[in-house]
Image (cartoon, rainbow, N blue to C red; front, side):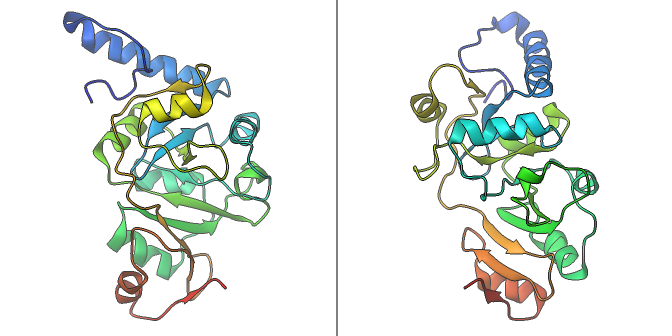
Length: 224
C-alpha cells in the first residue's frame, strides 16, 4: 500500500504523493478527534477504528455495527508504551504473554484504566488490547499516533471483511475507509483473559491454546 492513511477514492499525483500523504494523515486524525469512525486493515480483518477515549466515538461504533451493548470492543496499540493509557496493571502471566507472543494475533483482557468509556468493556472492568504484527496496520496506527478501536468492520453477526470494497458494500459511502489492500483474514485473534491467574482462554483463534500453555508453562482452561 503506497499510502496507509489515504481515504479510499482520494487522488494524489506521483510528484506530490508525500505531501498528500501527510495531509491525509492529519485529515484522518481530525476525523477521529471529532468522534468519527474509520475502517482500516488490521492484522486479521478490516476493523472499525474510533478514539477509545471518546465516549461518543465509541457509541458511534455500536450504532454503525448495530452491536449489542453487552459486547465489548477491543483496542489496538502500535507500541507497548501505549498500554499504560488503557490498563491499570499487567500481571506476571500477562507480561510473559506480551514478551513472548506480541506483536501478534493475541488479544489480552486486562484490568481497564479508570476513566475510559464503560462501553469499551461492556461493564466487565476489563479491556481487550492487542499489538498487531501486520506492517500495514502498524504503519497506519503509527500515523494516527494513538490507540484505536478495532472491532471487526461488519454488521453484527455478518462475516468479517477482507477488502475495502467489502466494507463499502456493507456500510455504504458515508463511512471513511482507509484502503490497505486485502487483509489476511484467515482467523480471528485469540482472546485470553490475562486479568486473572491463571489466565483463561476466552476465544480460540490464530494463536493455539497449546502455544499459550507452552509459553506460560502451565495449563489454562477455556471459558465454558
